[in-house]
Image (cartoon, rainbow, N blue to C red; front, side, top):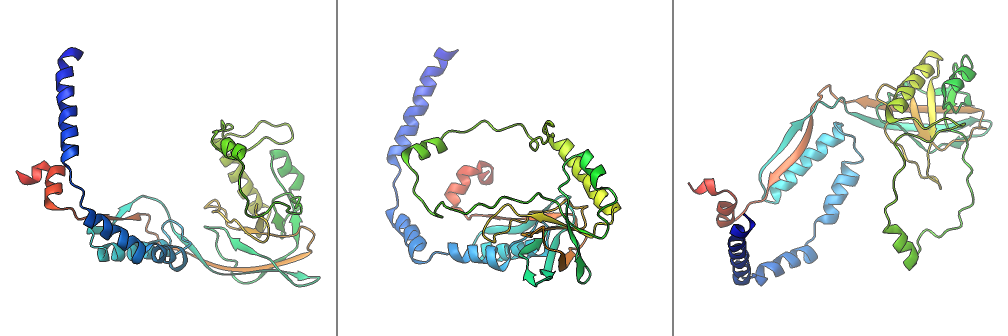
Length: 298
């Protein structure tokens, strides 16, 4: 069977090489593309629109839909064909926040850098309470703090050891460091690291415990939970919260501060559980389009 195919394969290779050799490169078009890229670039304008004007944005949020409408308008101006928004889903409600303030008000005023986590409602006015450190990681921790958190703002993470930064912000890597980056380490099994000699949790176990912990905070009457950011120097990383957690917040805070006050305003988007993608097609010369879709010439 293989011997029968050898002449056909040789013919196919010969034809492919011949066609490739006959291809003529239109240098004028190439230079037009290069001139457009260097003399009239739109990359930074596009990044500005999607990053600053319509971002940051969550899936299915008002900013997300506004960015989609802008993308469709822009793609049409770029002369793409059949540009449209395509729905997919279901996903769930969108979310956005419109204001935030947070500070220590006693014994001295001190602002707190922070962000409300996604899918958490607003505080419906100023919320003032005493903070308490409660790093709950196991079922035993739940019993330890039961009945002690009502009316308190919970600092859910243990204090970080913030060492003096000594590494420069920008540095060149050595040949060995570059070589080390080329080696792909074998990742650890999924799930968070075990604590106190406990084995690490699987993703399913971790999610189940988060749901248990969220319900515990609600049952205990905790008005707000503060998540400490992993970043340094005033930078805050604020990801999304569980969609059923109603009071999470991300900030850089001190556990020794006696009184905190927060006020946030947020809104859930309309209950349209479908989400959108922006689509468009590049216009192709008729000859190329005929090769891609032979049925169009029948």
